[in-house]
Image (cartoon, rainbow over all chains, first blue to last red; front, side, top):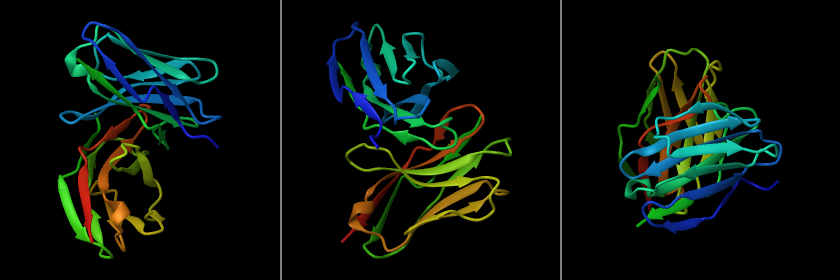
Length: 113
Length: 113
């Protein structure tokens, strides 16, 4: 059974640009959640989707958005990139909800220059 | 809001010895899950062990076991017969009713030969 797949693995963007990250969950999993990991702030929750519905959103500015498609694949978008958005973005997949059990992808390392 | 505290930023242990990582949490919920995740240098977040709060029996997975003290809101991880491959950052995480995981700041464990 394939694991959680995040693409791309690495990304370099310029301030002011926008970026889209993708996450394909484990087959059959309907919940996808996103986390930002930085050395200073640690792991912070961005949002969670289940069957195309956002069930929770973390304390991030409106520049951060996400969506989930009918096949459970999810994307997150960051507009007007800032240097502080440089981070490892992790996606987690779960059968019914990340609160019970979650499996993570390898992450996307975003660098904003 | 739930919080997770890991009071040991770094720990080291000799190969084959036993080490215990500490974690405390705060919540007003009665039903929840607790997790230990391992993040090696590859940055892949790997689920080590999971504990359901309504289960009194401590979870065990091979060399990994937990000491779950619900009243004290304590959830420590014991690693027996430490191996070089156990070297990683270990995160304690809480999963409750709000469809997200709340992570501690992590403990960097180094296993020395």
